[in-house]
Image 1 (spheres, rainbow, N blue to C red):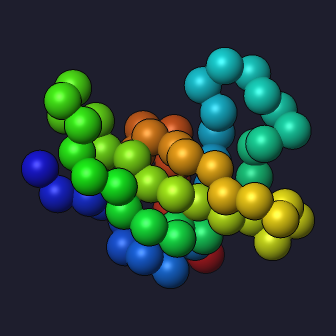
Image 2 (tube, helix red, strand yellow; image 1 turned 120 degrees about the vertical axis):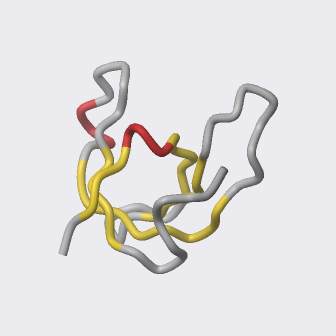
Length: 64
């Protein structure tokens, strides 16, 4: 299974469970190892926040 997004790519994060404050543009910081359930995940970072988040691939889309 291959990650769709590369490190440094700009993405739009759409949280699954209504966390509207987190929605927005992020940069891929790291590709995480594939878990037992075969879900692909990433560490992402917004310029507006001082911390990183973990997002699953289905929550991300490409942006310019």
